[in-house]
Image (tube, rainbow over all chains, first blue to last red; front, side):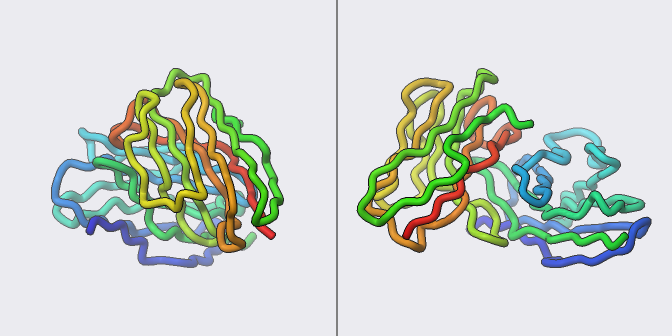
Length: 110
Length: 114
């Protein structure tokens, strides 16, 4: 069965620390890749997406992600987090339908 | 703000009630989705409508009945629900079906079944 794995379930960082959240998927074909963010009490919002082309994609709020095809990975990064980045982050993979990872809860301490 | 509007935002119902959740989008998207999200869990796909036709039903119990009256509207009819059906129900849309584009989510309808 197809799956999306997010290895970090809960991450706690101080402001200005660097962030990397892992995402791996199991599907050998062409996929579309997404990171969604859910701020407390808000709806899911798209952070960034990869369909094709440059494997390093930049999203909103200073986030970026790198698609490494050989590793089936699409890790999310941010060089310097802010308190306002506290949220839950979901990786999603789309081919015939969307598959979501289990989510990573990020707490940024001021 | 999201361009996918869901009503009601909160719903409390008994196990014998019949209620409906509504979703509306005016982005011209041709695929619409219902997801169920439990606390601290990812969204779970329930149904997909593509060009107003049900294209995916993820083996959802018949007490949940989707309806797509037109390309802008999506309903979820609820009947004889169980307390374990309490969750946040999310509607989403995309330009077309097949997971080739991003999903736009509504804020969700929080359902409590007593």
